[in-house]
Image 1 (spheres, rainbow, N blue to C red):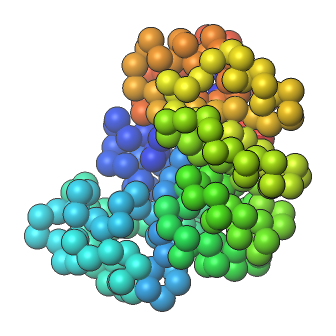
Image 2: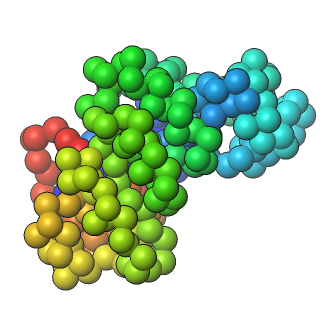
Length: 236
């Protein structure tokens, strides 16, 4: 089983910052969240606004990313002293594979445009999303994209798994409590990898590993290490 550092090493550094992504090893990959700015730049942050992670005296901390230009977003000061990174800054600073969560449909077009002129980076990226329509549109605009379907509380409503082309559909990623050996076997028989999110204690980590999933998103990549490691790099 592989491990994926959730929002970088979020238990060790402030989530979705360069510090967190650089702390992701020994995880095999890391996960990040992407929004688009008002001028269609791709920025890495989980929430619509920076209020939860910014300093209290930071400008623009309560304004949605979609309403700010990149210049304004860069004026936001996070609680660890960094600013909000762009996707390009993260990819340039790291080498691990990436789970890229699309947080809003408005990011789809800028993402397709970005990777269309940077095809060398696509092999690193698994685009994941709870919004099925966003994944469908991304594939329409970027036919080489590999995608994963996220689910939070139910395995129902998965018609999209039959609608997405098999060349694009790489993974199903349910919440860890949904995982069972039967579910994993079902998707493996269809040629679909299975991941889960987000592991924060040893008991749930052991259950996920016993179920036979391919990769687990974890809050601390140093604390949660698979019992059986592989020398093969993670590929989506």
